[in-house]
Amino acid sequence: MRMSRERIFHLADLIVKELTASAAVTVRAPDELRAEVVRVLTEEAKLEDSIDLEVRRILASYARPLPEGSREWEVLYQKTREEVFKRRFRL
Figure (spheres, rainbow, N blue to C red):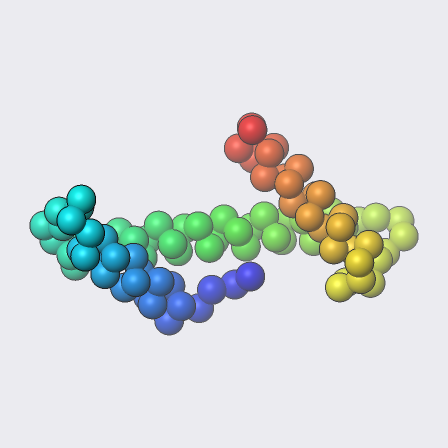
């Protein structure tokens, strides 16, 4: 799922708000923390997009194309996504 910039900013604000409200965490520079959270969320979204693209390419290369959204396509998508994730991160 692609995240919009607004969604990323909203999530970053929620994370920073929770961290600053926690007694166990001391935040010295909330603006810098927010920028770092936005950066990490953006990188994570790009990673998810690249994995999604790779999985869709793999599924499209099958001899018998499956209709996207069908139960069989969803099962193959999840299995292939797990394989790609494991291959990329060597889990």
